[in-house]
Image 1 (cartoon, rainbow, N blue to C red):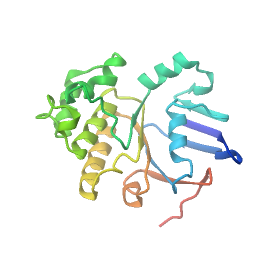
Image 2: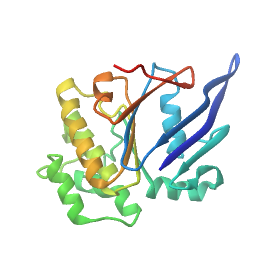
Image 3: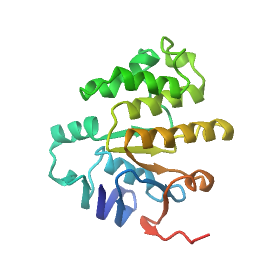
Length: 222
């Protein structure tokens, strides 16, 4: 479903080019969940941003269900981000002027795939049914992240990208949000690529890979 081949990305710094990704290749099957691990600065978030179409690679190929990002102009990339992928950020990134109901439906409405029955189910499963008229500032951190999860799932995208989605939550709340995310990803029929520092959370996903110095390294078997 997702194919990454020979992906490289560097940034110009005071000492010259800093190579963040160096020939990364990775595959993700339909409906599969994959944890991307590694130390800070190893290139995890950069890889996620490239797959999301938020940045351009220096070389290599990213293909989602046969659609190559390399061939897309900026207008087509915007459509790709709207229709084919959804991103869950660590910082929630909710729209402060919209109530929970409108935050949940935001990307689905943009994509023209707003399904009221699916939205109602998401709100109920995520414990948000009684909070739909509240604004993000009126919610706890855990509730805000549940809204972010629901917003990503509302459009039922082929691929969900999550960048440390529970990084701002306590362990108990993180476990609850993670369990809901995995259940609903399966129900939506999506695949999940998640960046995490937590081996405990990573073990709940189907596969785990580690980035080190911009390259994929094999994670030892337990």
